[in-house]
Amino acid sequence: QVQLVESGGGLVQAGGSLRLSCAASGRTFSSYAMGWFRQAPGKEREFVAAISWSGGNTFYVDSVKGRFTISRDNAKNTVYLQMNSLKPEDTDVYYCAANAVRYVPLRASEYAYWGQGTQVTVSS
Image (cartoon, rainbow, N blue to C red):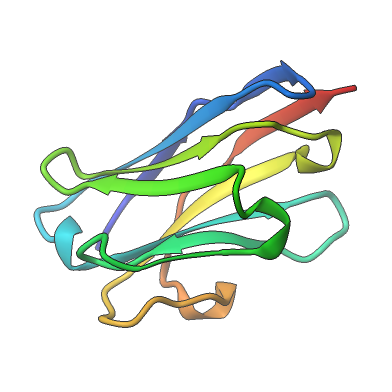
């Protein structure tokens, strides 16, 4: 069982930056692939970025490539999402997710554990 707690969301102007953090409980964090998703009211949860258990492989949705960076610190049981050059269309609730698999899941249905979400609002 893994519990995930996101932090770092907030209100920022377009062009600004935020860094989201997701702290995980448990002693097996290093064996989990991690992902970030986002969701607007009435819409499906959208994949944003994912990272392998080792940190050696990362994946991004096209709309954030070159602007967002996912990373992890297994010693701190934490995964990060550095978001730069933010746009109003990045406004959403952001969720982190985890699953104990060796590949990197890109779909929400492939993740077993979820955080409660953190709101990111980008003003124009």
